[in-house]
Length: 53
Image (cartoon, rainbow, N blue to C red; front, side, top):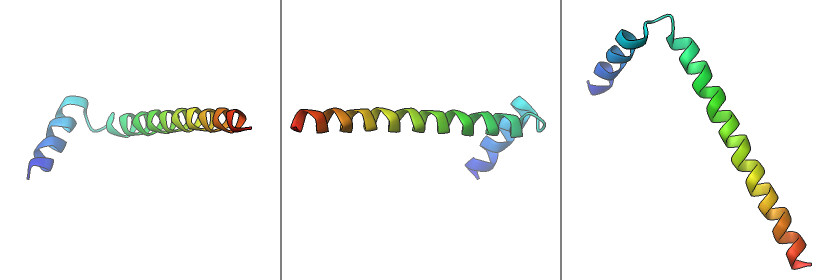
């Protein structure tokens, strides 16, 4: 029930035409964040491998 109210509030605030655009930009932002954190983890692994040699 509460999810339905949240969805209704979002539709009223942004309009139904803007929702796909908002979802697309949110997905793209999450993908970029995931790639950046993966890149940092890879750099840390590389640094640890160099230190252990």
